[in-house]
Image (cartoon, one colour):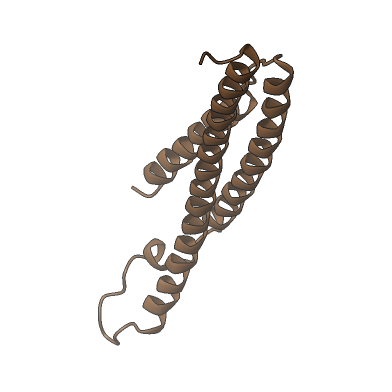
Length: 141
């Protein structure tokens, strides 16, 4: 028995809705990854700061002191950068949900138009993170 045109449209829309949901979940995974990276960056800065205090506190008398820049406390850039990354991850999750609902409505109305705001935000985030890491590594040499 052949499918009616209405049934074929419902099946097609179901597949498109599932693809939209998969895209949404991929954006959520990406935002969680950005937030996790921000958390690691912030905690690593705290670890470096604690190690510097530990090295200063437990210097062996009469031993050669390590260079001052090796044990000075962190300037706090990693904490600021980590918090900023967590915020960007939260913003990405919110924008992903807004995009998901917008596309869902467009699918039902058959008026889909692509949006690049999330793509641009992700590309900009990766660019800024890479730039920061390059500057951080060059500065620490």
